[in-house]
Length: 216
Figure (cartoon, rainbow, N blue to C red):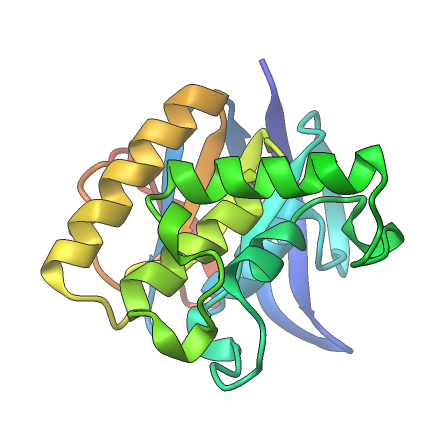
């Protein structure tokens, strides 16, 4: 079974520790909710679990080999002139190595995988649309497609339900359940709310450390 293990871990930025004495086991096939107040260190914990943010102290071990990260949609400039197709393509490791005008087999493979990824999230007819032309829920699904195109074995999603209406939240929940089952991947979801009812485990960030509270 694949696992991520943190032991006596401290995480932070520069010399400042945001979280200390963190002991966590993340297990394959589970769906984790990371919850806590604004500024409590939820994103710091998530980035530390994936190894994106190095530990200040303690140890981290992981047997997951294909991690993916879905950042907060609010961090993107929606006026930037990029299509949903181009956004999703960036999730492919070979994307940066291939010329946009290339006719190579690798380029054709990226184009086909991008179309497949957009189709799986229900955006196949929107591939040429720009950021500012789609709804918040549609943009979030495109970000999820960008992460899933690499067929990850673990995915961190930072507030995937923020600024999305009730219908959009339902659609994203169904999408995450379907795709995590298809890929057999573990999900870690950062969210302010306790009502992410499909999560199987809860990690609560509070008082500069983390408590595992079992079922979310």
